[in-house]
Length: 417
Image 1 (cartoon, rainbow, N blue to C red):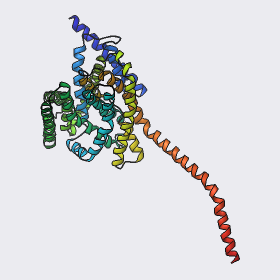
Image 2: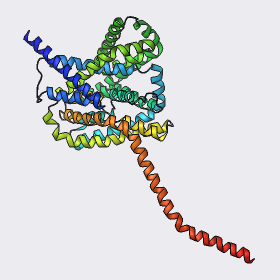
Image 3: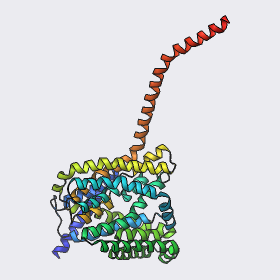
Image 4: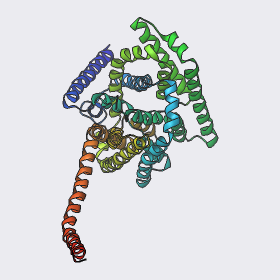
C-alpha cells in the first residue's frame, strides 16, 4: 500500500510539473521538449528529487509515448503518398544521410568510442524530429506552403530508413555475427514490405474494419491494434516505433482523421513521459564533460540540415525563400535521436549524456532556425546585392568623362568633315 501511495504521488507530481512546464513553453513560444528533458534530469539519478516508486511505470509509459508519436505521424500519410514520395525524393534522402550522419560518426571516432558507437552517434545526428517539426509547421502556419511536402518527404524517408538502420544497430550492439545480422535485416525488410503491401492493397478494408462512429470504440481498436503490431515488430527485430508508423500509414480517410483527433491528447501525455524517462537515466554530472562536443556537433549539423533542405527544395523547383524555410525547418532533433542513444548506452554509456546535450541544444535551436533562417538569409542576400550595386555605381562615374570625351571628339570630326 505504501508503494502504491508513493507511486501515485510521484506520478501526480511529474504530470503536474510537465503541465506547468508545457504552459510556460507555450507562453514563450518554444517547444516544451527541452523542459521535459530538464525535468527528467531533475527527477533522475543524481538530480534534485530522484524518483523511486514510479520508475517502472514511467519506463512503460515512455515506450507507449514513442509508439503514439510515430502512429500519429503515420496517420498524416496514405500508402500511395508514401510510395510516391519514396520514388521522387530518394536522392534528397541520400544527401540527407551523407551530410548529417557523417559528423556524428566522425565525432565518435575522434573521441575514441569505437565503430559501434560511431554508427549509433551517426543515427543521432542524422534523424530530424518529426514530432517537433510537425508542431513547428503548425505553429508557423506553413502546412500549406509549397516547400512543406519536401520537408515531409525527407521526414518520411528518415522514418522509413529506421526500419533498416535500427535492426543493424541492434545487431551491432548485441555483437551478432554477420550472418545473424543479415538475417535480422532481411526479416526487418520483409516485415516492412509486407505491411506496406497490405496498406497499399487492402488499406480501405483495414480502415473499414477499424472504423466506428463511437469515439470510445475507435480509440480502443486503433490503440490496441497499434500496440499489437508494435509488439510483433519489436519481436521481429523491427523497431516498435516503425511498426506503429506503418499502422498509421495503413489507416486512411475519416478513420485516420478521427483517430488522430482522439489520440492526440494521449500522445502528448505519453510523449512527455518519454522525454522525462530519457532524462531520468542521464546523470546531470555527466553532461558538462561532453558539452563542447555537443556544441560542435550542433553547430555543424545545423548547417548540414539547412543545406539538405535547401538542396531538396531547389531540386523540387521551390523559390529561394522556400528553400531557406525548408532548410531551417529540418534542424530540430528529438525522439529518434533519443531512442537511438537509449539503445547505445549499454555499449557506450557516454553516448547518452552527449545525445541529451545535443538534443537539448537543437530542440531549442530548431524552432528558431525554422522561423529566422529565411528572413536572415534574404537580408544577407540583399545586403550583398546592395554592396555589389554600390561598387558598380562607384566605378561608373570614373568611366563617364572618357566616354563623354570620346563622344565630343567624334562630333568634332563629323563637323569638320
